[in-house]
Image (tube, rainbow, N blue to C red; front, top):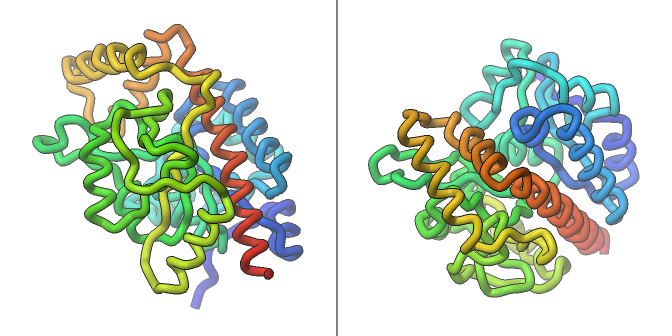
Length: 307
């Protein structure tokens, strides 16, 4: 049987050999989230935050026919400047590998690759979900089904606020995905600490989240956990401020007939413009915050396994 096309960076290989905690990081934030060189600076900052919090970062991307688990500095810089990069979810991953193209992993694809590499914890910005108007378009992110299928704990600032959050929570509940708000009862909404919706579950420390991850494995339950970590108060854009901006961006997307994978990048860019860059500053702050919590969960999970 042919070996899996996994290529570990030197740092990740050492961490695995030494039994150190690892945190997976996605790569679409690098290729589709912001321009160069800010994307590279942010990727380096997120990796540094994981290291400072006692874990080892593993940024995941597809390059030259292999799934790279961890990128060395030259690979990270090359990805940050690459053109025509595929945005990979479950449906695209094998095709990208087979054709030798460069691909950046979304939440779903990062979960798949992290699990193949034996990494149990993943930090991202926000997950995809049920798009507004999905009752007509059936536009639902593959991230939700991946959370139901792949045993990785995902730390995010909730779901992106451009989505239909009540329907997103309903789909997650239907598929048995634990949705855990960290340190509060409300489900966070990416740029805002509260969506106005109560989270199904609440946990206040990383060790309990790690224990719940391990318990799911012992019970033989499929899928992972969504840890909804609210954006730091100092970086928050309040819900009453961001909601009108989102409505304007959604109306423009509908008027221009933008659909499918093009919707989210368009909306995020317009919201960036309409908030004069404040949304991007908030995005960076919440990703760093998620990296810190993910590292703590990975450390606790490693300690529990070794203990």
